[in-house]
Amino acid sequence: MLAIIGGTGLTKLPGLSITHRQVIRTPYGEPSGPISFGDLDGHPVAFLARHGHGHTIPPHLVNYRANIWALHAQKVSHVVSVATVGGIHAELSPGRMAVPNQIMDYTHGRETTFADYGEKPVTHLDFTWPYCEEMRQRCITALRQAREGFMDGGVYACVQGPRLETKAEIDRLAKDGADMVGMTGMPEAYLARELGLCYAAVTVAVNWAAGRGDSAAGISPEVIEATLDDVMGRLRTVLKNLACMSYGSDTSSTGGGVCAV
Ligand code: HPA
Image 1 (cartoon, rainbow, N blue to C red):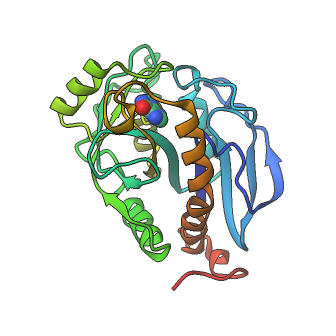
Image 2: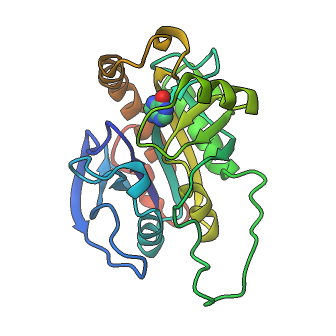
Image 3: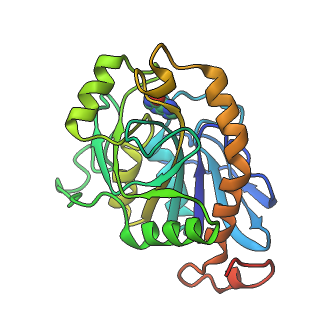
């Protein structure tokens, strides 16, 4: 089954008709909220709001382990993370989407593994390509079907937040090779890898990163709000296209609603 982890602006999934909500307790504490199960235009999905229902959990305090563990425990096989970013690459103006293929992690103090506490032998999992290519390709297909212009690939720099960056920090990230900057991609992607979930991200640029484009003098919250409003309908089409595809043993996803061709 497909799960959608919704980020800023996506605490609810428009068009998701919910059949039930499941509160899941995990050995790692509480997830950001109950997982909603239902269908998106007739296609089954699970949905979890990363920042909580009322968008009250900041990026550095999200319990990434509990979230990923809970999805895995509910037999989710594929995960699409929807995450807002600041655009660094010239192609990533506000409103543009991307399917990154690389990550750089600048976060600190987050719980980064399930392999703590000496329960299992220490493992060093391969993370050369941090996203599941199968899921990336599904996202790319869904974006093409929605006739979205988007960036295929790109380096996602994950920063600690919750504050936005200084211009100097963005200049440094650009020199490091970052194309976009966000606050939630890690450790989420690695934890998904540890549990064998096929995980990729669709990122949405909601502002130029600090010091770039119309953020030269500062990042305007109004720009972010307006971009989010503008992008949500388009994002919903992309997610519906993703939900239309079948996932593992879940054959019901081709029934019900209408899929893009
Ligand atoms: N920086 C970090 N995270 C973000 C940004 C940004 O400019 N915009 C949206 N998420």
